[in-house]
Image (cartoon, rainbow, N blue to C red):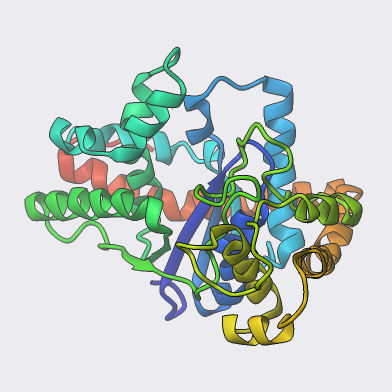
Length: 335
């Protein structure tokens, strides 16, 4: 705990293009709560290496993600926004924690099974031990709270298990992190297949709204969104998953209830509703897009923030790492 504030930790992988789902499900919540905590937000580039990356594009994507964090409203002078790979403690602590993690625990991780099925030609050890690195990310900074979605619950649970096990052997070393669940409205599904989540890696370009899509592109994608043969705009996940997805998005963007959305569009057709959703999303994203374009031109400002925040993250990380190294009996460096 720093400055009497609890520590919040989260991050995103530096691959693909962030979607509306990433924004409403995570980034917007970070912006809403970051001032309540001592907050760290990582560009999780080490995690991204479980899939082969084009080096040039990878570096560009990572920097773009950093700028998007800032453009979305995360102040890099008040929050520690940094690159995971710039702090060697992540990898060092991950190795130590892997020696306190059981194979059975990793075998139960559903995300490994899911990712392995999608990358059958590259089922590497990093993909398997990914949860240990994630545990190191969180525990390295003694995080009190971690924003999580349903797909990350398992990773936080194994993090808590590893920390509890280590503390049971060596004493009170790690803070046991708690899950933080943001406000409802984070469920954003594919516009072409409302049975699955909107994804950065979807091969169908019409399935996802990307944060840097222009207004015309956003509206066009919503006009092509899959709905149903009915014309009644009402929320029903089982009977009308497509239109329900659009209602959830519109409600999240306009901060209205489902009932208010249904009443607003009572007697109106799908075409009019899709246009309204597209316009609302485009309007919400426009200020962030403008800020992003401005920050792209301010290279020295971004470089300075990266340098400062790397130093902040390293200072926090080294305290935990040295404590862990001493506890397990590693020989201290002569300084």
